[in-house]
Length: 326
Ligand SMILES: Cc1ncc(C[n+]2csc(CCOP(=O)(O)OP(=O)(O)O)c2C)c(N)n1
Image (cartoon, rainbow, N blue to C red; front, top):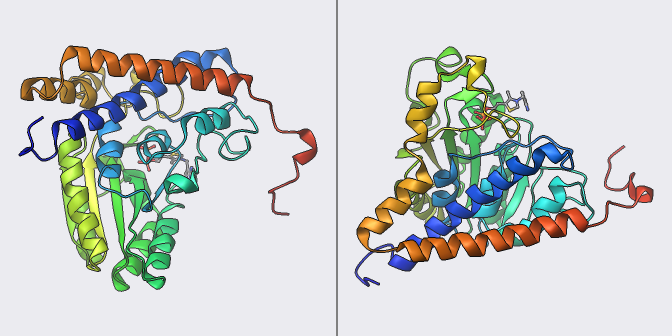
């Protein structure tokens, strides 16, 4: 432990552990998906772990996040309950939405996961609403909206940025630019300008960070969160990263031709989890024994959580009409 180091060795290991845990959980979902017991679509964030973990490491438990269809990493990084997440994906009553939502509707009010919603960009104004509530109650909480590059093409995102900026709300708009909206690359959808340039139009600062570098993400998010907490208003953060697997599902789909295998391999070589392990090893902050022990403990946690989710009961059919607006 080097007391002069910021973050400390323990904090560095915790960041690594959080990324590894998300990776192993999603790899296990992918491995078991063909069993056809998870009867909902899954949008995996394998390859994007540094963005979720770096951003959430800058937050307090009472801060709130919102997410999209690709929400597993955000939910877990913010402290969402793993058993409730897996039970939800298995459609069980013990799931975080009582088994009615599936993988794209992860909520955990106790952990500050306000909502995850798969209608693209629809959760962005929810984060703004959470920030407005913090402001009106004179609380020092901060809300973070996680959104993809595709969400910047939705009007409600710009309404949200406009409103948040006008009222100096304590919210951070965290864009994970993974360069694709399903199969359509960014350069076919948006003009050639940095995504961060959109912030100026809404009168707010922008920060760019390497989305595969957890420390870079943490640094940018800490800065934006400190400003928001101090009453300086919102920030737009853009972090470039890459989804390894298909848009939706457990497989790889580079053979479809919307992106090249070479591009995928170049990003895979920049694996945020493996790269951080190597960095910690160089720094002397983590040994192989440390990382093996982490992987073992996480593996046992995952096995137990899948066991719980698979064995849990389905919702009672008589409750089907509950929690439904009509
Ligand atoms: C309003 C709306 N339009 C279209 C879709 C279909 N859709 C689901 S995910 C997605 C891509 C979103 O891209 P992005 O926001 O960049 O997130 P990513 O999938 O890359 O994580 C689209 C178009 C949707 N869910 N909602």
